[in-house]
Length: 469
Ligand code: SF4
Image 1 (cartoon, rainbow, N blue to C red):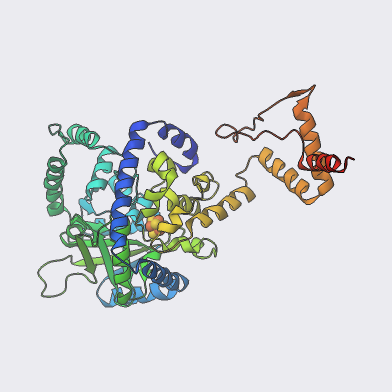
Image 2: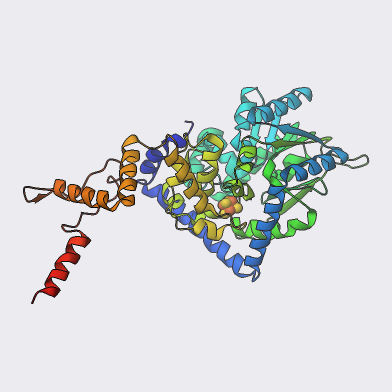
């Protein structure tokens, strides 16, 4: 089933009642947070690094046109090809045209949220290309026909017995829930695909404008195999992944793995600057870089939301978010879940389509505190709420109540008259009708009972009492 952010409330209320799912999320996110804390404690200058990373991303995003053009020139000078894709369709068409030109039948893909965002695998499959996700988590959810439930751990919502049953059902192996056996089986299967594939597709963690290099950070080695074994490699990156220079990279290589998995460094960091050069033994004969916009230019033009483009997709804000921990990733109805998903999904898909997501937050600020690039996530959620309220996303009853409230707060006489009227209405014939029921609001929270006497009445009574002879 294709999920949609429109149905956040119904997915969330279903998932929150599933104790097994909540336990799975609780265990996974608390482990991730423990590992992160340990790794961060080892870096006394952590806050300085966060601040510097923020400034680097600010520089890159504020001069995005300059750095992207520089990157393009460098990639082309290194022998690569660059394609600017306005949206997912543009990017998919380019990949399909390349696959047709080289007569590819099998495509191997490494983990990439950007290609998830545009549903690239489904589009390639529809065009008859066998498309295999090679990251273990992505492989699992591809078999299950599901969306990722976490930015860095796509199958986080599944237990190992569920994965064992899935492998048994879909791949015809004997049931096992032993992780090593499941991994070994997946590895054998995927090896055959790496050997057969003509086209490899990857994402990009960072693109270095001054050298034309893309950097891929991973733990399984599948990205390196996907980018080196097939004849052609296409990397798809969101425009925001560019950073100005090579010397900026070490800061991000310190922040990203610690924030996402609590590692000092991931097992593999691949630097790709060009296709195979004359005399080299291996590597793809062609290297293509697809620069995907897909709504990023509009975010760039929006001064309040621009900062969301700083995201390096570490997933830490998901792990720490009390809402994500309880409702789970699929509730968001988007490949991007958690606090950053609640920010960028409405920006990508429209506030009308995802109007509940900015409310999927307690505004506690834990997301902003943990973010390695210091994105002010919870204020962005607040600004999006303002847009929901100002747009068509609010029911007319709520808008009317807010207008009356505003008028009352601006005018003392109206306020006194309104509160006296409400107090009288709630106390008819000596009987108090409380608590109030307000559709949507009091389903999950109490409406505080109105005090029998207003503050002003009480004050007057107190004064009378004091002045009594
Ligand atoms: S918003 Fe910050 S914490 Fe969340 S995924 Fe992006 S970089 Fe990580």
